[in-house]
Length: 229
Ligand SMILES: [Fe+2]
Image 1 (cartoon, rainbow, N blue to C red):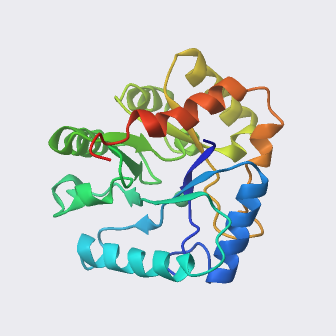
Image 2: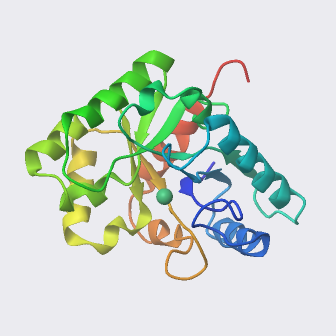
């Protein structure tokens, strides 16, 4: 099932879809691009939220609002894009932000110099809750991290999420290719926020000769589904 692992499609919860009309249009575009399963990943910034429980209430309200609209998406799964901050692994209820029904959790590294504590937070979340970290848009960090720091992160026992626009940059494309060569696990996402500059873009993947890699990405969701489902 073609899967978008990273999408700000829920209405009025973050800097993504501004209303349900835009959400429905975004889902319609994704559907026309062959996407059958969309993981909604609104931003979660611990320092801005009252609590995980409060965020989950807001997310549910946004989801319910969208679900009463004519919905062109076969499967809309709830998740979050969790900003890695100091102490995030100890935040009460952090494990509840995993992608619903799976052991996957989408984590976003800070945009700034790399520091060892970031890897420690990722490691702690993964060990404490038996979750598989998915590091959001890893290719973006080549502008922030040195080569050895990037190698350090890529050694993490994680899945690496790639934004489809990776092919628009020579450096990022080169990094993507070397990750595939190294056998790292990769999943794709649109990271779409709206209908304009950051619109759904799975059409980019269709033009590339990487169908096997995209299928692997799709299959990772089922691989990490919880048995209880
Ligand atoms: Fe995002």
